[in-house]
Image (cartoon, rainbow, N blue to C red; front, top):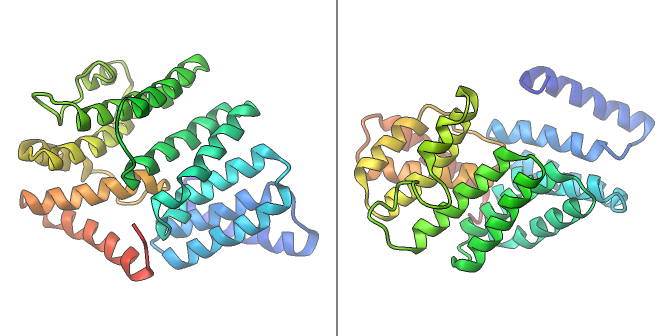
Amino acid sequence: FQWNERLLTVLLKRLIRRVIDDGMGKEFPCTFAILGVLMQKKGKVQASTEIGNVTLLLLEKFKSDKIIYARTKMIVIATLGFQLQSFRSQADALLHCHKDLKFVGSIENAMGAALVYFGSYLSAGFPLGPLLESKLQIVEEFGYRYDKRSFAVLFKMLRQFAINLRQRSDNPSEFNGDAYNEEDTLNGMNEQKSKMMLRDSGAYRIQLAFIFGDRECMTSMLDILSTYPYTFHDVTRLHPRLCFMGLSAFAVKYKNKEVGEKCLEYFQKLTKAGSLN
């Protein structure tokens, strides 16, 4: 049902009516948050944020269940909270979610929380440096240890992004370093996985291209990224992607004017709603 948004919305609303009549189980807050995610993808900033706030209040009843509590809180912050709240304000909460989920052995959720944490860390403008890179490498190795290769590759990519921002290189907008080599990685993946990785690596590379003035790379990344939807559940990955797509599109006067306009529309809507990002 997850790909049939209309059907999922109907089912969630029926579930809410059932809960009103029969009471709430511990899985309900996370299920309720999914309704907010669906609204977020439709651009309903205020309504989805309110659902996130209500979810966090409901969640307090199940604070003793660390998996339910940390997983649901992570989902709410990443998908709904960051629409209006600053990335800096919730970074520590996400780090606690990661630690709690790791402690109870919920490996995939712990990796997801770490990914959102480091995304918010970078978007908030916290310091770069060897300490950050070593932390990324620790989580990367943790992913490989528990057979979460897709997550591990994302942390390799993040680490290379941080290195390229900090260290001098001939081609800072390319991913061909010791931490992550894009060509080698994509060659070892099937078409579906490589398409997802291209979206994520493209989002980082277009930031580097804009920062270092690589107009050719900006254009090539726009050619790739403009083929993906302009919505995504994880705001820490969607926000910088659309930000630098828009900046790059206007900087190079990209052939498809709709690209820059769509990105600008996203931020205008958030600004109107009072976003701090």
